Amino acid sequence: MKFFVDTAEVDAIAELNDLGMVDGVTTNPSLIMKSGRDILEVTKEIAAMVDGPVSAEVVALEADQMIEEGRKLAKIAENIAVKVPLTWDGLKACKVLSDEGNMVNVTLCFSVNQALLAAKAGATFISPFIGRLDDINLDGMELIADIRTVYDNFGFETQILAASIRSVNHIADSARIGADVITAPPNVIKAMASHPLTDKGLATFMADWEKTGQKIL
Image 1 (spheres, helix red, strand yellow):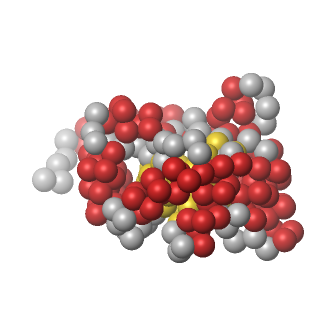
Image 2 (cartoon, one colour):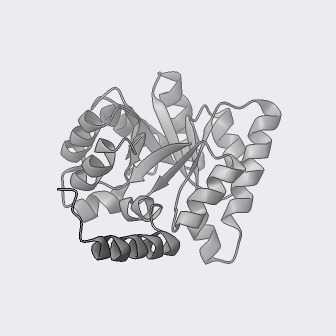
């Protein structure tokens, strides 16, 4: 499974990238706003830092404008994936941009039907939003599983990018189901290393080591 980092904070990306934990990055207008940076400037910096795809999102709502914005974003670097919303206009933009050889991430997916349309339009990635479905008492993981089944049935090459990840359980469940990629905030990825039994065991080891009176350095 590939790990994408869902942030526009370059320091957080750099820390995870140095550990080999970054296969790509996803951004969106909200994350750009939180960073306080210019979208073109920060996207260029991120794309130079990581080897994998960096999703940069259009903000237009009509297909023609999405296409123009997507072309501009794609010129930032070779590893840019243009991010478009799963609307009819977004699908039109996806088709044009993907036919031109660009990676396209179709975002805000909440149904299998939407995922089917995105794959038919040539999407590189489809981004089902797990957490937002859970928020309205629907099973986000069920959607990931259903898309996996449908894509495998018909051999679609579109990669399932599990998004709106809220917890480490979301990541583990996505891996079990067979999502190709997850994108999660840095703090959620780092939380994967934590377990109360690890903390308890380490505390026991340190207490016993202190009793020996020894030092390694």
